[in-house]
Structure formats: structure tokens, C-alpha cells
Amino acid sequence: MTESPGGVPTSRPYYSGPPSQPGRTQPATLADILERVLDKGIIIAGDIRVNLLDIELLTIKLRLLVVSVDKAEEMGIDWWRHDPMLTVRERGLDEENRQLRERLAELEGGGSEDGSSDGQPAKESGRAGGRSR
Amino acid sequence: MTAPQPPVGVSADTGRYLYAVCRGLDAAAVDSVQGIDGATLELVDHRDLVALVSTVPLSSYGEEALRRNLEDLSWLETVVRAHDTVIHAAARHAPTAPLRLATVCFDDAAVRDRLREWYVALTDVLDRVDGCSEWSVKVLVPTEAPEPSETAAPTSGADYLRRKKSDAARRAGTAEAATATAHLVHDSLASHARDSRQLPPQDPRLSGHEGTMVLNAAYLVPDDAAEAFAGLVAGLGAEHPDVVVDGRGPWPPYSFAMLEQR
Picture 1 (tube, chains in turn yellow, orange):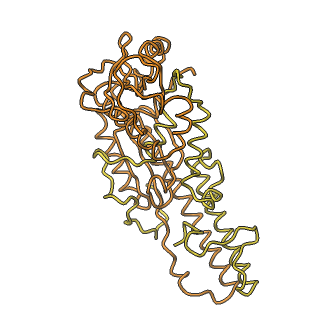
Picture 2: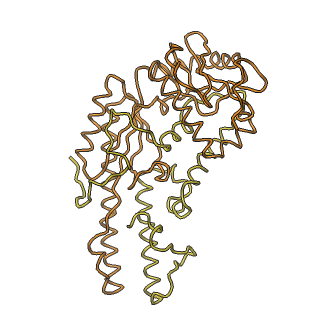
Picture 3: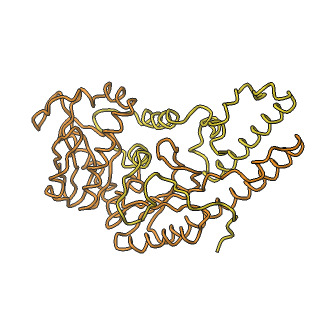
């Protein structure tokens, strides 16, 4: 029914476990549990005051904690508030731009300079992209 | 680190940790389940509602201690998992409204006060989720393999930029197609669910997924339609081989348990 872009390999695993089968019980990832237990559920103030702002900050911190700095920058600090679709697209283009700028600088500088113009040191191949491997 | 289990009852050193509010939950149903720190689960009732509680030491769950402990990811993970285990067990047996992490009252009277105060709103929530479970469905786009064109070294800077441009255009097309697929999958699933919510995409470091998550959604599905829903998820996966459609459940209705007024 949809036009698939074609040419994208499909059979690689996404989770380390076997391919998921709805209806079978699967171990929930910590991400699945955290996003529900911390972000969802009924809020009733108990006698012990847990500032809701604290919890919100906590989830933000948690997300940042587990995200490397360049990844967080790549996503934008408040990426989870954005339309996921939009974020994905923007992220791709930003990354693309960055790579182009780096490559350009490299070519213009005769390959001697490996840095990018915006003061962000280019990571040695591996981690910089996340997308390109 | 864990304080010895204090006797059940009122004590200045302990509080009552609330997991969920249920309707018609039989205590025997959660008999074999342990609460946080291995504590015994108990029910505090008000009319037809019960709060599922256990005793916690305020040395760990008092205001100061909580503020400190919530910052500790391994402490948090332990508590979050225990919280979730209890709620899963309850939701298998009765309509269950999960409470957010770390709702602590001083004693059972205070717990009953909450049930009394929020009775109508809690009843509404339980009516809404009665007979339903939450299903989590994610759509993931594979990480791209390098194009063959990228394996040969570019012959010039201009050649390199030309290649990059065409790759970028191709990738933008892929992202657009993935977005369209995510919308299709969501619309199709939502039309078979009683309710649905879109959640923020997850971080791969926490979830362990590879590729780009373009849909992370929760669906409230009647239990008698769960099999059909699972079939639909599998069917959508087969229909869209360019993405992975990952369905998991059943979950307690976390994403659909919200009080009307706050």
C-alpha cells in the first residue's frame, strides 16, 4: 500500500533478542519501564512531597545522562518535546551539514586540519555520526 | 543499606508506599508478589477501591532521602522495576490504575483519605481501562549501510560534494517515507484501539535499539481483542518491510491512567 523507498536492507536485528512477537511476554527494556513509571501513571500527592518538577527534571537529566554530549546536541536539548518525525528529519540534515562542512574544511586545508569550524572537535571517525557506519 | 523490615503499622520511621489503585482486587492475587525491598504487599480499601501498598523506611523514602536517591540510577532502576512488577501482577487480576513512582503516605488513614478525595476521578480512570491493556508499538528504521559509491575514494572535492548531495537527497526521501509509514502504522493501530498516545522516541542507550525510532506509541486495547491487535501489528510489519514494527505487551494501562483534574 505504501511506496517503500527500496534498497534498504531489512533483515538486520534491532534488539539483541529474537525478533519480537506480539502476544508473547518479553522482557521490558529499562527505557520502556522508565518512560511509564516516571512519566505516566496517576499523580496523587502523598505525605512525602516529591516535587513533580523534580521528577520532570529527573527524567530530563536521565535522558541527558545516558546520551553522549554530541548526541544530545545533535538531538537538541529538548528533543523529546518535538514531533519525533520532525526531529528525525532535522537530525539527519544537521548531521549531513556538519559532515559536509568538516569534509570541506579538510579539503580546503589540505587535510591537515581535522576540526570543524564551529569549535566542535570532530570525533575520530567512529562516534561522530552514529548514523554513518 | 536496606533497613530491616519494620512491623506493619504506623511508625514514625516508616511510610506507606502506594503502587496502584484497583477495583475488586483479591489480596490472594498478589500473595506471591513482593513489594519494594521484598516488603509484603497489603491492601487499603475505601468502598470498592483498594490501594496496593507496602511499608517503606522513611530513611530511604523521606523527602530528603528521595531527592537524593532518585538521582541514583541503580537505586532508581531497582525501585522502578519493583514498582512495575507489582502493578503488572495487579493488572492481571483487576482493573488497575498505576500511580506514579514514589507516592508515599504516613499511614493507612492518610491512604484512605486520598482514596476518598479522589474517588470519583479514580473510578472514571478504572472505568476507562477496565478490561483493557496497554500495548507498546515502535517503528524503527534501519541504520543505513554505506552506499557502494562511498567505498571508492572521490576523485575530487567537487565529486565528493556531488555524491554527498545525492546521498542527502536519497536519505531525505528515506526519512520522508519512514515518516509516512509511521503515520500509516499508527493510524491503522489507533483505529483498532480504544485509545492511543504517542510517546517521545527513546534513547538507544536505554532501550538498546538500533536504527532510528520514528514511532513510539501506546495503545489501549480490550483484552478480548489483544490477539487481533497482535495480528495487526505482525501484518503491518510484513506490509512494510522497510521498517521494523516492534510490538510489546500487555502492559498495565500506564499511559492511559490520568486523573481528569489535577
